[in-house]
Image 1 (cartoon, rainbow, N blue to C red):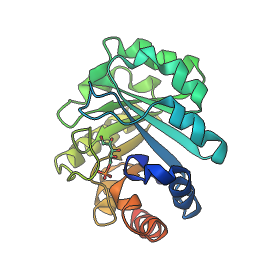
Image 2: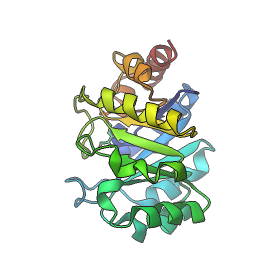
Image 3: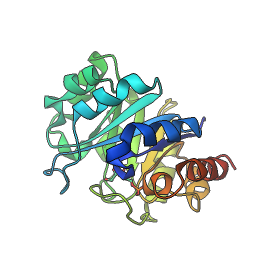
Image 4: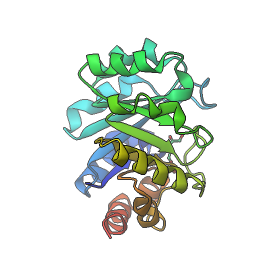
Length: 218
Ligand SMILES: O=C(CO)[C@@H](O)[C@H](O)COP(=O)(O)O
């Protein structure tokens, strides 16, 4: 399965967002991970679809919108129109998860569901055949720069087994505390899309991306 780096712009320099995003893409990142936070589902407020709309003309790479918001079904069309290619909603934030997944697909976008570290895989098991991607949070969502939670590796392993046994084609994304030093071990568990925020945007972006890609593809 193809491995992909998805830099999370939450850790970018917001005053120079377009520049930072293009630097990461030029260095080899294939997705842009866009963390939308509402101050309710998670403690922090980040930004909304106008930021996606502003970035969209800069590049054709995949925009992966991670909606950390309550009742995300209210905004699916807005994020689709703004230019998101993949829309990820949290299982914990949806009363009617199946309905929201179909809302995303009806907009012609790839549908993904995220689960927090303490949420069991059973929360997504029945909708799994409908999904393009599952995001396994490897920190409690809300902030960049947190430490990877080690037990999440086992969860990724179980999810990959479940996907294989059901003969499905579903990507597994991991998000939180992922960096050059642990990415190879996480990949070995079965993840194939890696969100890195601080590991990409703190310091020299180009150098960081190249180092992460090298470790990711080991
Ligand atoms: O969704 C989130 C945080 O809730 C992430 O996407 C973070 O932005 C990842 O940051 P790092 O842990 O890689 O610094």
